[in-house]
Length: 154
Image 1 (spheres, helix red, strand yellow):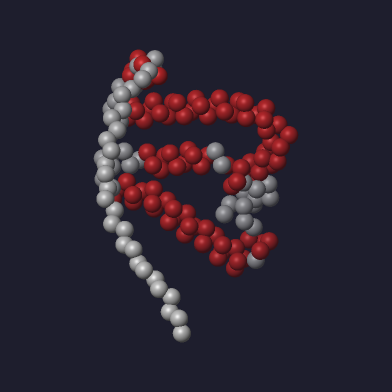
Image 2 (tube, one colour):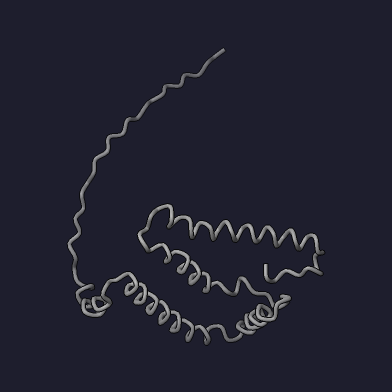
């Protein structure tokens, strides 16, 4: 939506496309806020929109265009074109940055929910040990209806 040009496609078509884009964004975002409210997730509903936003940050290259009418988006679009030559070298540092942000966000979320973050570090070695898992088999009886089909010969 931020990469559309009102003068390139015509003003009427631009308004229509931006309106449809806005409606699509509103419908998608409404699910992020209505679902936690309707399921009564007990104070954890804020995690859904925050996590969706953070996940979408990994896809920023899909949302920018070098010919955008907005300077910030145009700058990101030009940066995307420049990444074709340096992408792998750059992503060495970006992957480290993403791991740090992910880990920090996880610790902050655990702390906000009222749990101690000390267990994250104190029980690190025991988390790689064996853990007993109880598996209970549930038997389901299925009724299979057989239908006999006989061909009708004239």
